[in-house]
Length: 335
View (cartoon, rainbow, N blue to C red):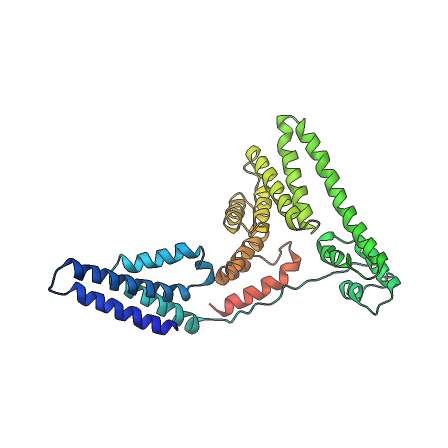
């Protein structure tokens, strides 16, 4: 049954209930009949209104239904008219005032190569090389050796995909590289935890901060996945909170805490931490990229434009220059 039919039925039932309410005959039967007619109109209107809500407002489902139904049922006539107006605005406004059409595209993935002049890999996309069925295995092994000296943040995905490679040497190299990078950080974590257990009060802050950074590095370098990643982020957040109890004015640690919460998709808490780091003195260049990411996840595109426009041209995040330029240009164009 279409929404238009349900809307017509809802209005008809509500009009019928109003006629009963205005009837000169006063009896319990008339009142009960009014309640049934009005309740039916409210239920039908709830179905229509809930159907045009954005997806993020439909959860939790039962509570959102009850909220709309209660609004329509306990405010006779006016509540129904307000919902009708909301439905009309929800359909009409997006189609008439949309300034720019945004589409969903796949997240780009880059594999930058900082190779020496004689390495022979300057112009080769390593991801394409390692996944190629036509490239010689010896050349692909050389490509793996180049990945060994590159940051795990930009090579983690390529290495993980190579774990299922058809050539055994490539599989072994990818496993060895990932395992080595993870073990280096794990050893540092174990050493820091041993020092924290017997540390004096004056050193607990620095050790807790160090542990939070190390656990975050495991996630940042894409060295952990699944449940292990969730546990790692939980540990990073725990030690960040421990350090902040000792030094609540550490703006950099609030920034780290915000990024940890962002990785855990705790957008509300992440935003609070990041905003607090701004209040403690960090610049827009340091904080706004992460605030913009939160706004983008919430589809607050106007907010993304404003945050990116506040990033100055001397930003340390040189890889964001193109993004800043894009949002700044589009933000000006749509003012």
